[in-house]
Each structure stands twice: as structure tokens, then as C-alpha cells.
Length: 108
Length: 114
Image (cartoon, rainbow over all chains, first blue to last red; front, side, top):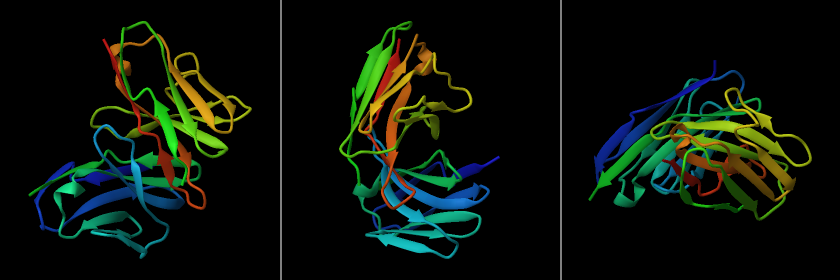
């Protein structure tokens, strides 16, 4: 069965303290690995799509990478406004399967 | 990417009643997706709504409990029927992005059943 697992469940960082979020996936025939940001009371906001192992994408302080089994979301020198829940999802065939998310808190 | 307007943003409902959630997209889309997000859990797909045909429901979700309408290419509704406290959740609609397999989501409806 296709599965997407995110770790850690929660992460607290000091402002400027870089770290990484992990997304492990087991899907057959990956068609895309997606990262979203979700703020409280809002729907997920699309960040990145990764299609093949070795691919990397960047946006401001965020960088997403992909291997054959997992994806990482690297956060460099985070700011308090980066606090949110980060979701990853894997698409195979017609099915988009989401992880439970990592709740990131960045303290000033 | 598409912009989705979803309403209501939140509601508190009595058990046994029904709530209809509306999603309006600013462009025509073939498929719309309805998700449920329970506290601390991942998004779970309820159904896929295609215009002009019956919605396709995922395992564990049935039309009698979650009837969906899709009258045109920009609008859809999800009704949560005969609600119980277990239906308390965030409900989200989404559409696939143009040129990408990613999804754009509405802002969600936070439902509390008392």
C-alpha cells in the first residue's frame, strides 16, 4: 500500500537555526512529490513539485530535494514567519497521498 | 494558478443536521477534489467530482453521507449529511494546477458538530 510518512511531527527552531524536514514515501510509479505549506485556518499552499531522484528546487529560504525513497525540505536561516505546518504528498497514477505534516515553530 | 473561494469558512452545527460547503473556482476545471483533514492527521480524499457525471468516492465514503454536486466547470458543493461529532473536521476542495500535477486548495471549512 502506498504510504507517505513525515518526520518529525513537530520541530521548534530558533530564528536562524537551519534544519531539515523529512518525507519518506513508498508508492509505485511516482509521478510527483509535492510540498505544501499550511497556515492555521487556511488551506495548503503549494510550494514545490519534484519529479525525479536528484532533482532540487529552491524558493527563498526553502530547498526541496528528492531521492528514490525520500524527500527533504531544507530550511536555511528560518524566520518566525516560516512557522507553519509543512505537508508532503506523493502522486502515483491518479492518487495523491499526503503525509500528516511537520509542524514548524520558529522562535525569534 | 487557479483561485478557489470556499465557504463557509467555519460552522458549528447540531448533530443530525446537514451542512453544504461551496467551492467556486475562477477558471474552468475538469476535476475537483474534496478532502477531509482531521486534527493532527493527513488529508484524506473523500471524492473526485467531474462535471456531468457522478462523483467518484474513495473507500470509506458514501454518496448518502457526502453528496456532491458539480453543475458546471467552475463550481461544486459537498454536503455533510446527518452529522455526528465524528464529522468534526476541516473540509477542503482542490483542483489540479495547469501544467503540473500539484493541487491548488481552497481555504477550507472548519466544521464542529455538537
